[in-house]
Image (cartoon, rainbow, N blue to C red; front, side, top):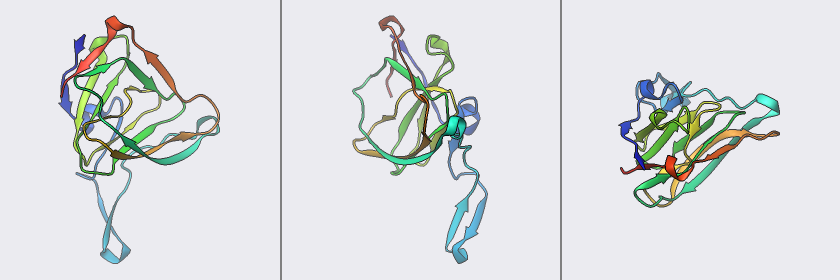
Length: 163
């Protein structure tokens, strides 16, 4: 198996794959008579192709056995997909430009205050968490057409992540 190195999640490193959603460095806009702050334009939601609309949901995820063996990658050809943690728990993001090219894989350690918005067509692994019942708000596309493409890797192409 090929071991994938893990980097800290940052906006600069993740730009080829989509957006990092975090309030650090974002413009603070006072709202509600100064009792709240709004952070605008944190991600580009891309869900309108082929008659799609935005779907907002919550996912509860559980950890996979360690080390994590990567056998599957997926992408969404008709829209972006945003994950934002609802608890302050670290989690992991795995992306690649070509699932069959080991050197294209990138793993990122996300803190519990960072989310990601995978760009349309970006290969990524399903949600990777370290704690049981890790909850995420998800914004993705619903509507006509097939917006999920999965690629199961052959055993010789499996990868391994060991946080």
